[in-house]
Length: 245
Image (cartoon, rainbow, N blue to C red; front, side):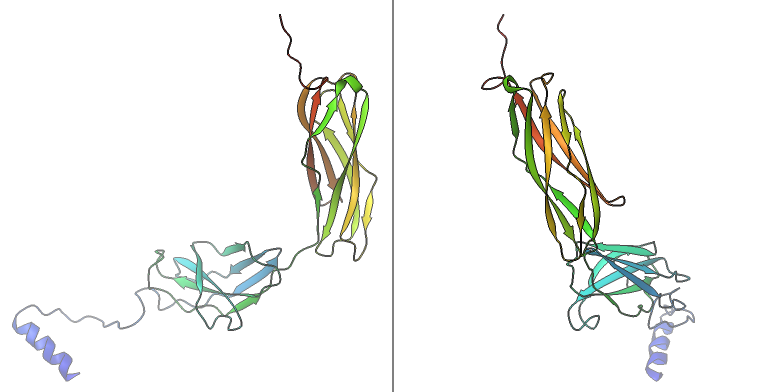
């Protein structure tokens, strides 16, 4: 205290001392009233949604994530500085534990040291949700129109993921003139089943013309819908013919 007075007196003798001011030796102006936000996290498939309550006086919020057994008691990665009240952390590994905190900030700048108290550490593990996936061969189906009408059958694979169970129906659409396609009958996944082979039938009529395009198989259970396309190449003889005049 005496040292502070002595310094002031020395400056005052030179007429360069400042007037009385409130000393602030911690925090930042305008942030003393900031409180901890309340954070909620919702795990999903390869992602975690982080939401938090609004903090009066906060200009922005900074979201941090860390991994490992020490949870939030170790170094953290800054995911985002946002004006909003939610953040979706994507590209995560299912089955791996992630920890989050949110800090209210008195200023928007990322490098600002003006911030309030952090939220409690929240922990979640993303999990694969029930889903289906459809994969068809990507190599060309080549049909010689000299042999029309013709029928071609290709096998596709329908996958059940994340413990999916249910009944899946199919439809098919062709993008080529004179070419139609038919999907398989309904298939049902019961507990423990992970994949089934489904066939798509491609019919090439005498009205088909030379060209390239796709036939697309659609799979749906009424809520989920997935699709996969097969390239089709229509030729005459050994390949496309060029007329000479």
